[in-house]
Image (cartoon, rainbow, N blue to C red; front, side, top):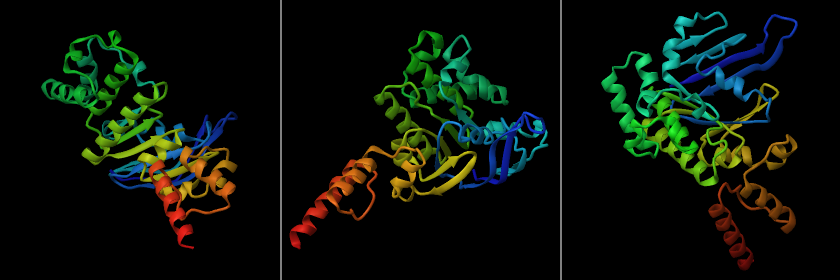
Length: 289
């Protein structure tokens, strides 16, 4: 599903003496099937931008277009229902949103609320509980009898059960150990490719942005400062560091290596494997000279 922001601005307490601008004149095009990573400091506007993707917030000015649906400042709530059905948001700590007495009921709640039959909702629950890495037996358990990591997977299954065309991930691995983080992020990437989803990832992890995203947008003080492929974005680590942002560890290591060795590798490496290959190539070229 194609998404566009056209001159979108948003202010909290709009039109009052307490008005505070969070987004300003955002121009953003997210192609159908694209995986977009959004990075920036706390307070840069990432979460505000995210909430425009399923009309939890409506722009103070400008236009958000999601598929064939247009969202303006005065768009009526009844016109937003189709958008909220097709755009699933996984917030930080989604397990806090669990409330039903069984895992099955919790996963089925969303789709049934939008008119899906019980039999179809239960079919999706049985399929998705396995996709998120849990055994089917947990469907009969209370979600509150599960571990924190298992509860998060149940909450994610509930979002996916809506059968969204767009999935929005707001720091979805917060609080997980490194293994759990990778498992969750790999799962989302597999679903992104399998279902051809449009995916938007808001993250502080430069490694995740580099590894999974097709495109990265940098937000600062409510404005998009730069947008491009990960290789383009991370090829200028000084710019990112000057903005107070981090870079992937391998990019930081390459940056330090080049400064200390007085050399410049032929490309910015986004993985250890690429870095090792570039070092070998450099040594081979020096041997020939």
